[in-house]
Length: 473
Picture 1 (cartoon, rainbow, N blue to C red):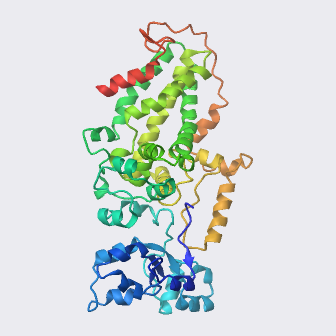
Picture 2: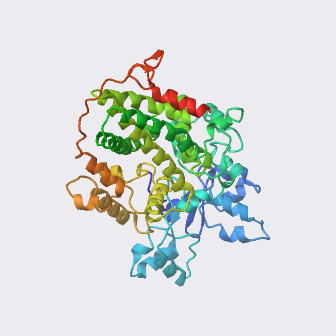
Picture 3: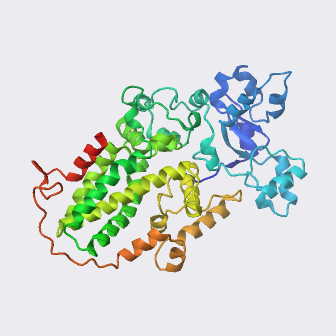
């Protein structure tokens, strides 16, 4: 389950894993499942089996027996599955005044110091490692992946080859695909791994500046058209309503479309579409050119909302256009925020938002769907708790439950509103703003955006067409 730390495995269970079917080794308190590595070991699998269920630190450090390079130690980390509370650890626990700082492993900083005073080797960090991602913190998202080693270990995607073809022909089960696609990789300093590997490759890459360049002119034009039928009070009121509606759309798309994970059909069509839509972003979250939405994909997603706005605000076409423009402006803010959260140093409010969003990547992808605001995460009880320290899992879960309960209902208004930002208050107040009804005439049939659509092409909404023309330029 996402957000769950790597387990502490009983010492007896580790010792029993000493066969070719299941082989564990340990280094201090870390446990590694090297079963799939037995056949690939340069010295042969039998050598590893001699140490199955045992600590291998001494033999790996013995240069006379077999020299192990730094890359060999890094490769071993790929097989890390948990921790073991061995006898020396349990002796320290027995006389400790704060045993919960030691077990479950990894220990807290104070617990690690206590173990070290007793001469117990506790390698590595004291930060928790999340089972679903294999990561501890946001910094891990920038650690470059050993491309060949990763493919040999996980048998998923070779980052040196076009990815889409591998997803389509890989024959992956849904369970295996979802497990792997949510374990982030980092490709050569954040560059883009090949997706198609042919002339279509440039179409998959979108620099952040394309979003405002392509979409701000249509928003300005649409707002101008709407102003022809709305008065000075109605226009901004409807526009702000559209902006606020976007915040809910943002949350809904991220949670129910981009993370449709468990409802995906277990076939290559469903997995490939998921990978193209959002899976590749979780697989390579620091890819600078695949963070914002390509204009063509946005046109596909935005078109239904154009028709929805026209249906909901059917009493006034100009009002529907103003609402839609406000919503599109919200999207622009969302995509730019998303990019900057991944790649820029930001002021205080956005620094907190950055930590929150990156936690969605390295810790728990089934919660934390808000990007520009946590508001809807609080409302729908999907807010992420603060990143976990190395405390007992039960204690941490209790704390997380308390935090999430605070956003479960509006009855405790103070706790919710204390964390609101400017946009949250705008959203709240917009429900109480009454937009004066306008006696606007029906839109002329011969202007772009009239009820008849683009002149000469009835039934086609103007927004995608205008956007497509601008994007082609």
